[in-house]
Structures are given as C-alpha cells and as structure tokens.
Image (cartoon, rainbow, N blue to C red; front, side):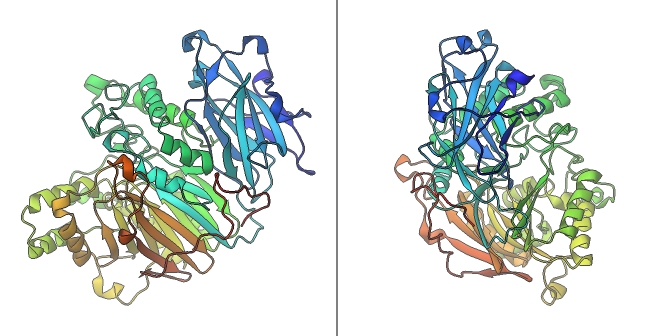
Length: 576
C-alpha cells in the first residue's frame, strides 16, 4: 500500500537514501525531495491525525553498513485506541542532535494491527557513521534518538566496544544495570541475549514494591504480551539505553514461557492455557512489534542472523529456543541427551552457523546465543561441594539441575558438530556470548572438557563469556560463595564464576584481543544507588588473538578519546 510506504528523500552526497517499512508489513520504497525536518508536516490524510504521546521512548537496532532499524510507539491520547484505524507518522534522520543537518525523511503509518508500533528500516546511509533521528505525528515530536551504522566489509575497523546484558525481570527490582549501561560514554551497540521480558503474574517471580507486572496475570494471549512489553518500555533507564545505542537482540524463553522449546514449554499447560502454537505466535508477533529487530523476508519469527563490524567482527546471532529445539531431557543421567538426533536448533540453522564460522575472514568470530555452551560436570561439582562442607547439597544440586539440561549439556550432538567445525577447520578467535542463567562465567571451550590432563596441554577451541542478569536472581547468598569454589574445582575450564550479583559485560575488541570486563551494580533495590557500579567487584578477563586461553586481571580498557554518547558533544564525523 503506497500511502503507507512513501519514502521522502533528501540526498546525502551522492548516496541514495530510502526507508523500508517493517513491523508486520512487506517492504517497498520510492523517493522524492522533501522540505526541512522542522515543519512537523506528516504525509497522508492530515485532517485525521489523532493526538498522540510518545510514552515508550525511541529505539534503534540491527545496524548494518548502510541501514538501521528505527522504532517508536505512538499512544492515542484523545481517542480510544479501538477508535483509531491509522496514524500517519513522519521519521526524520540527521547528522546532529539538534536535527538541523538533515539527511532525510520518510512517511509511514501505524495502527492497531501492529499495536501502534512504528518500525522503519532506514536504508541508504553512510557506513561507520553516527546519526540522530526523531518521529513526529502532527505537531507532536518524540525524543531524539541516536544510532549508528557499522563499518563496511571493506573497512578496516580497529576497535569495537559494546555491552552485553540479559535477564531483565521488571518485577524483581530496579533497572540499575540499564542505567549504568546508559552512562557508558562510547559504546557502539548493545547485545541483549534474551529474557527482555518475563511472562509471570504478580508475585510469581519477583515482588518488588511498585513493579507488579501488567497485566495482573501470566501473559498468554497477544494483548497480554503487548501490554507486558509496553510496561517494560515505560522504564526510564531502559528507554535511555535504547535512546543512545542501537541494540542487537535475541529472545530466550521468558519472552514466551519458561524453558520453552519448539513444541511447548515447562510453563505452559495446554489444558488450561490453550494451544502452544497460538501462544508461541502471539509472543513472536509482540516481540517483533516492540523490539527494533529486522524482519527476515517471508521467514516469520527468524531471529538467527549475521552482523559484520568491518573486518573486525563477524557476529552470528542464534535461536536455540523456539526455532528447532527438542524437548529437554529430565536429568543428566538420561542417556537421551547423547542421542545423535537430538537438536537444539534446526538443521538449516546449524548449517548456516557452521558455514558462517568456516568462511568468516574477520579477525574475530563471535556468537550471541541463549544458554551456556561449556560443559558443567554436575557429579564432580557436587563431590567438590561436599568436600568444601556445603551443608545442603540437595539445594545446590537443585540449582545446578535447574540450569543444566536446558543448556547445551542436554544437546551433546549439536555441540559436538560446532566443536568439530572449529577443530577440523582450525578456526581460531571464536568467542561465545551467553545469557539465561543470571550469573557470570568465563569458560574455556575444549573438544573434550572432561579430559583434564589433555586440556592442560591442548589449547582451547574457543572462549565463552556468560553475562550476569539485569535483575533476575542468581544463587542464594548463603551458598553462592562456596558454590563458586566448587564449580571451579570440579570444572577447571571455568576460569571465572560469580553466582549472585547483577551487572553487565563491557566488551572491548581490537585485532589483538577481546577483553570482557564484568561490571556489577551496588544495588537493584536502592533508588539512591541507581546505576552505581561497585569497582571492588570488577573482573577483567579476555583472550588474545590466536590463543583462546583466558587471561585474567589485566588493566581495564581505556574509553575512547572521543566520547560519543547521546548527552556528550555530538560526533559529526565517521567513527571507528
């Protein structure tokens, strides 16, 4: 429908600028010159433009060398949403925060069919460049957002800095971690590894005062998932992260239901909650409406995709949750976890991943995914716990079991295919980033992690850094310390383990090394400490190029000399 997709262009040098609508629609484009961005004019039937508010901020995501997704949500304010059939929206992009150095504008529409979300794929941009953007409906304007394109494949990017976050349960505490991330001055992007929302009702998993989840029950239907996403997007600290940095995201289980897999979930009862396929599709639709993620042609719900940051990083984002995963086994003793036919992803995705690793020519191959890849030997860990004097080994065992069979340990054949690809192809400089388990880990990945003697001599095939949570709880305080020691005693390939504190990973990448700096907040319950980091807890780990053995406790990386965050002086030139 042309009236929904008219792209209005102001040239950037000789570059063609186009915008492709997304958020549930197919894409097309056309272009013509336009007037300045400050007019506030909106294409379409302006006589029917409703009054709106931008209550959920702005966001960007999935940056490529020539385009980026821009997102907002408009809320009708003088008319009930059910009485509004469409809202014309203008999107403006510029080089400066004041929105005077105009690059281009595009018109689109939104409405109830996409929950009044607006999502455009802004194409025709220059590589390796910061931009500012704004949405308007009539005379009402959104906050200004800031985003960037990635260096092109021919560009020799020398450095990248990004934050890794996961597991942000609104009902479990304040988003202190998001505030700390938003105050970083020079990040290129945010990597969100899932559990962006949680599906539970009030009191079921978190009861922080004033943060009861909406709607006031477990979310099952499309309207439920939309309302939960909307509630999360009202948090000022999450809005600040989205406003300043493009996000690359994937879902984990709680965006649908706990311990979900292709055909069901632990937290789904078809007898009382209806068919899983309907719930799954509702969760996917709301996710693509409310997140700045690019849709993949006709493949509805595909989140596995690749990003190239110049010649420095090839980033492969996986779906180990909804796309091809078989039902989890119930116990580490179940021989079914070794079945050659068990899958954590489809054959199509696995082939795409192994080919991507084998053909990458970037300095670093990075994987963003949901659940811990490294082997965790539970039997040895429990023996170590008994030796250390942990009184309630059953409670510790329960914590471990709740993690383990949902991880790659429950899908041994698929993990082996990836390890065989790395070992057989002599592929080095591979780093895996993981979320899901609310705790911090730095793991060396071996072909056979159980062979302790061999692994003391052979180099690791890859490294894995597991991000702590934004709010979701880790191990109980009373067992966390000894549990950390027990895990490392029994699993010497796990070089750093912290099991209780919320935080994020600041990743600094050069051609020489990838460094992961675990940063932790003082509190997720105190408004006075919101965003305050605890410097005494900072942990630095990393790997050098050509060597996946994890180093520890080197100095922290230096911030860039030119600060590029939203509320620092704007950068008008390309960055690298």
